[in-house]
Amino acid sequence: MANDPKKDKKSSKGPTPEDIVNGFNALRTEQRSLAIKLSEFEMDLNEHKLVIETLKNVNEGRKCYRLVGGILTERKVKDVLPVLVANKERLTEFIEKLTEQLTKKGLEINEYKEKHSIRIRGQEDLKQEEEANVAESRGNVLVS
Image (cartoon, rainbow, N blue to C red):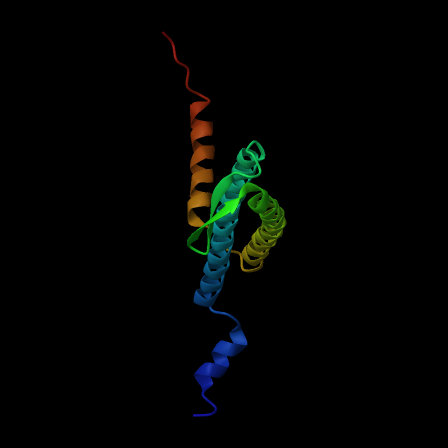
């Protein structure tokens, strides 16, 4: 049991094609989740900008409502505006970091594809079809 020859053969060959595909799919899933988070934070940033621009034109003593942790609270504009500006700055920094992570993940995926010679079926087929269509259409002439 301890010296199973099947296990020794698999470990000496390296990763199986299934392992390579699973690793590639895991990287792509991570990239998609980063992209989804990035888009959510960009939407939050746009909302913050919109609210800040609106509140700048309002009297500082006016009441406004803010949703904090699912609870709607009543505050004054002068209390809410600095918090919104600080949150906007933090969101901007976080979006920059997420963008860097997304770029690194893309590079990691490309390196993984090159290392394991991975080709995505849809991309290669489309390129070949486009090249064939361009070559075929050059000889045709329309006469009216």
